[in-house]
Length: 304
Image (cartoon, rainbow, N blue to C red; front, top):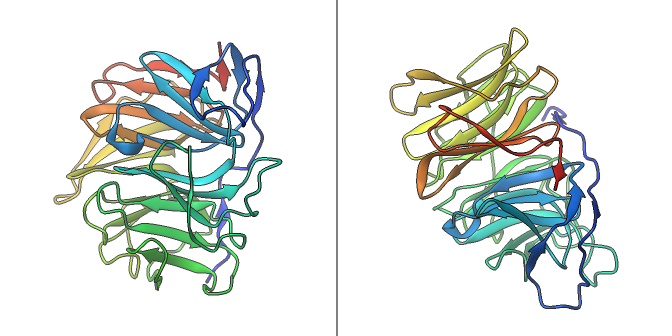
């Protein structure tokens, strides 16, 4: 397997203002002021309308027009991937935690109040992880061999009890931006990469290039369509495509510069036209009419 290099570097999260001790009951509390330096995933856990971002220092939630933060259990969530009953993730425990480092594959159904240890606890940190929103199938890119898995792409449909290695025939890129799984079809899988968008219909054993030679940074798969973001001629683009016919429809993207690409594309499970995107520089934009108008809900990670 080729060495796959991530397209976004890890950073830190620094919060000032309102803070809470981990000994208090777990809850999301108001943020007086803060700045997100980097985040590792985003979406709508538990089939709810609350939008959640996973950071180097715990979870933040955006609901009813305001941000709040988890008052404890501020783990460094990596590969954070929401699904209909909660989220799957990996990463590192917060300082002072009695959890082992790294977390391996974990699951939460209560917004991070508790974590169920599924696989490779204390052994592996999966930076690239994607989940079928309704199917619950989990794909991981294992970048370093562990006690059970070689380096490569794997999936599990039983929460880590058994793993299937993927051949990845036809995938030819050394830079991955993000991965996505169809919400109900566990075999429909996509990778956004520096060399284009690659789609698989057989669970990652073979791939076809949807776009070639165009850096693609973010990908979303929904029931009948997909949405990807790319950098073309110095411009950030958003494109919707029909999963059956392949027909593409350009969407209006937020006004972004080339050095601030879209890294995460998420969709409200109850409102298909509501998309929320996260950029490399931690700008977060939301549209309720599939790109007709965009509202900025975070600017360069600043929370006020």
